[in-house]
Image (cartoon, rainbow, N blue to C red; front, top):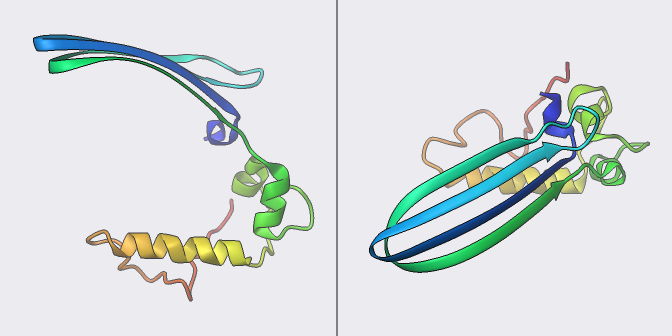
Length: 133
């Protein structure tokens, strides 16, 4: 599960064309974690389509942790990495900040709009207790 907190880069490209009853589409992308254990993971797709379409796309994404923002968001006394927050004890004794309460209200409201969701014991007044192991 440590891959969840590593910096990641994703690059991709696609091209597609269709005219009338026959068309083709091809897409390729790769995701790579940044660091000594970085291994690219490729994904390729190919498809058929109908109608009138032509297009080319390029995409990219960089995901990383902001230790200073973790400190501000969680109200910590020191900066903490995403790995420390998820797998360590950085959040022990953490008191909910206004940002955390706002996020909990937004998630509860979103869950309430989904049939069968939001029926558990957790409400904005009673946040879930998460044990960090």
